[in-house]
Image 1 (cartoon, rainbow, N blue to C red):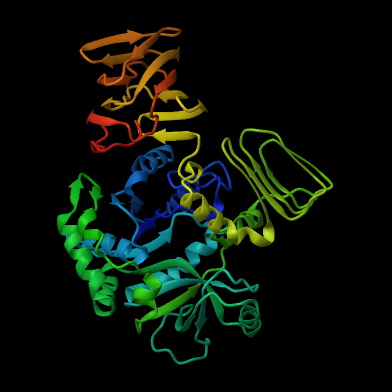
Image 2: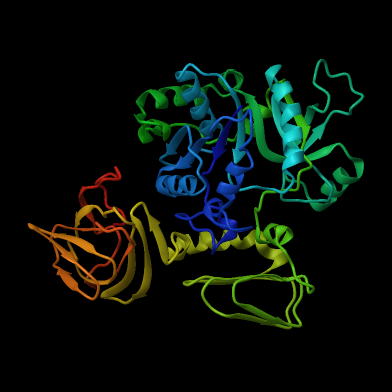
Length: 479
């Protein structure tokens, strides 16, 4: 069994913590580790192969860093230039396996779910494994114990129905139901036999591809051609953008599971939560005696059942109930818990008016380290830059801005046109407009500098790259 971890998506309903360049799956929301890392670690047991990770191209280095931090090596990394939903993502993973002469059972899991009962998860996997080995397409269903309108539902056959040779504990899927209204959801819970669609699947790679080819041949054919045109570098497959762009956008559910005659559901009562909204996160968070879930420097008075997350400032609540308050360095969001599904609408609005707060946090991570935006104006910008030992930024040039670098700690190796020199603590240098330059850390400790940019245009797309040890393309992107 090989875990196929789907780590795309932006998690816009958890803005402002989740951003396009740093989405929720890579954030530590329910502990010291990110949801992505927790997903991987709960699969570290006998019988489970190393994971195959499907990720956005822009998140490649976040994935590598988070894997390294928990000591897990992926057997493959598939980099999508853009999302085309789950059916093409899983098809590319299955085709990649078959291209290697392999045909394992694929355990398809989103990277951003919480599962608190790992013993129950393993029990469900044992049942699902037997069913999948018999050629079934297994979907893990969460017993619907309350009327949720934000989930899709599955109606399963009764245990006493005659359903062929299905293994005990697996049930034939009778019907898929879209997100219901409150009345229908309540009826589902009362009648029993209904499950929430978890988005978690188990099937053999070849079985999935056979079903995809039968029901969605356009997706299958496009993915086959995409694989032929994609670039393989070691265990990293960079999916060809021009071909993949032609692939229909569709989910596993619509493309295959709702059409196949081999869909079955295995109940999963394992403390599952998709952390799809701020109220979902409040549900799984530790709360005080007033029902408040508090993260960071937060003080409350006569306030109840709130979720408050502070990252950089003191946040105080007085006499309010049922609110979500999230503070980051560059944004503050306040929303009633009944309206958290509308956070995505706000993100769409911010995108439409060109706000950058949906893209990145002030602190941005790169393969060489990170930078923190400290101050900015119409003709200046100040950043705190940290470069890891042995790392270096790309050799680059700016057409519209000059830069001053001041070393705070560590040793900097500076390339500026035809000069290469070292700077140590409290020393500084000036990088003129249009100079070809590079910053590197030759030392054994992190290098920290303050960078002051000045000029008529300070956008991150004013970068022309000439060389980059991380294999990033010469197109204009951040440092």
